Length: 335
Ligand code: DAH
Image (cartoon, rainbow, N blue to C red):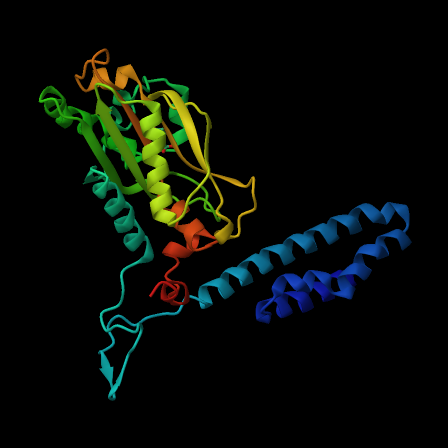
């Protein structure tokens, strides 16, 4: 037991200074402590095992804390109050004097540009909305189980920071109704930030970007939708792509699909490696009805997907959290 205490104090001190704290789990002193249990009388083994477990837990806690400390240390700090020209040496953070646009903004502009050239009007998505737009008008009735899948935040007053850009569909359809009546079609995208109460990991963020598309006419077909999406992805990645779909459920479309592309070889993909890019489908009659559009006369398709995912594939970014990390080394790669 005394040995455990000595090893514990020694390792905690070393973890606090180490650049690779997790490696310290491998030190021989620790192995020796663990194997020592076999040489103890049976009645002492229980208490000894418990102490070893406590030791391991304490080390884990210290290692996680040290790792977080190391992680933070790699975020370079910027003194935003510093004068531009200190003793004649200019503070050159970026090659241009004015800094640069965030890569996500640049890529979102690219996406908007491609769709507007295809004839879609681009509308920024709201950052605060209500149950009616986020759910009810999209055919999620009050107790619909699919609501749970959206991990929505709510304000005390019951407002919702939207969890998807589909929150704009009802407005787009209502405004577009006049166009349909004038013999035109509705073709719009809505783009912007969305929010979900999610645990963070390399592919999940609580705040991220989506882009949604809506098209309605008297003759819209699923084939047109697949053609539109294929053109978009081939333009965005600058190459021919294989696409596939599989059935998926979203209350606001019928049929609903998941749309995947084969990971381009130029981006390290192997044949048969599919990446799911977005959800899509033919707009559900109830969604058209909720906007006052006659679902017998008109039909439409819609899709929605994340922007980060597109950009991560394009630039082989392995962790979504880099975008908001504030790490200049990451941002400079896009200058
Ligand atoms: N809103 C869905 C989501 O965030 C994505 C989506 C699926 C949008 C199907 C659509 C659609 O417009 O038709 O998970």
